[in-house]
Amino acid sequence: MKPFKLGILGSGKGSNMAAIADACLSGALPCQIAQVLSDVPDAGILKHASDRGLTGRFIPPGKFRTKLDEEAEAEFIRSLQDAGVDLIVLAGFMRILKGPFITAFPNKVINIHPSLLPSFPGLEAWNQALSYGVKVTGCTVHYVDQGIDSGPIIGQATVPVLDQDTAETLHARIQQAERQLYPDCIRAIATGRVEVTGRRITTKPA
Amino acid sequence: MKPFKLGILGSGKGSNMAAIADACLSGALPCQIAQVLSDVPDAGILKHASDRGLTGRFIPPGKFRTKLDEEAEAEFIRSLQDAGVDLIVLAGFMRILKGPFITAFPNKVINIHPSLLPSFPGLEAWNQALSYGVKVTGCTVHYVDQGIDSGPIIGQATVPVLDQDTAETLHARIQQAERQLYPDCIRAIATGRVEVTGRRITTKPA
Image (cartoon, rainbow over all chains, first blue to last red; front, side, top):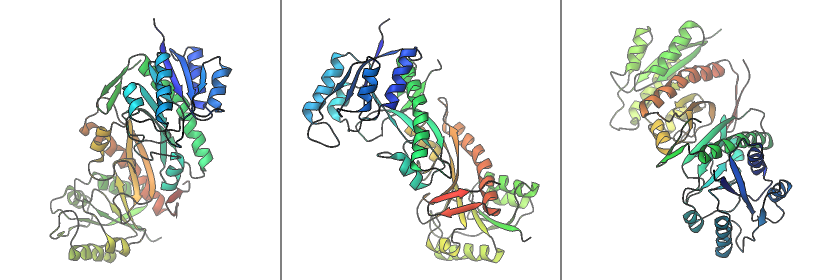
């Protein structure tokens, strides 16, 4: 059987990428990481890739701060197409991917966000949750569409907010939930169990 | 010891009011229901009150559809003040309470909303949750402020959204969670365990 190929994009430490890679290597996730791309030359995610013998590549993002410039976006697209990826997994990728990228990979780009969307889209969702005073937050895996953290939801996991929580303790607890939820959602997609009907996504049992 | 007196306002069936009343009668909730008020003459909540020998009263809401008129609001305030209530519990009360009411009872009005706020404020939150496609929703008990479902959160409970859920099945599951959460939050307030610091509310263990 042809392996299900993942392309992973990240700008930071790469803890979600490491969890996904380890699940692939152990056989828990029936996927192959075809490519790891970053817009940050010394990102931890590239180190995690090379540590595991995976293809990691830095692509210069160009002149903007929160998005890729046209040339860079085209290079990301070309690189992922050349690698023949079946699914693109955003794992702490800090630039907004707009029209051309989404159009090049329709329904093939997913992201994880550290809140129970639609609550707290955008940056530092754990801090937003603490400031608002919610008692429960969590993380959300969703398809990426043209909006910010607005695409159809594949899976969510809850995380309690404790009275004594700081930004650090809450963020750490959310990240722990992410490292479970993201591989679970990728496995469901890779094994053909995820069905998309408009915004409502159902997952058949394994 | 002076009993902790509740005033309950509702426009509908009154299933939350019935759960609270039964918890008071069984001794699970150390409170006394001093008054049940409704803006709807034949609301189930008034029937639940009379069935239990509690004081229920219909107050004509006046000429508006989504709020009380000035005279009606003054009558609600007067009635609750005369009864000497310590806490006002909104239980399916379908009119927005604005300035004068909130000012008359500072930090003494609470509401329950059928979603994990700040997701899905407003009407039919279970339908909003289904349309958005979230995997988890729930209910929220919060203090009432000048906004719509925007006050500081006292407690939240989660409810899974199932693939086969309809509006009816999801709403029923949320209501079941409400009948547990609302008495729990009222008990915490009545026993002095709730501490408000800005938007962040902590509850000491019982």
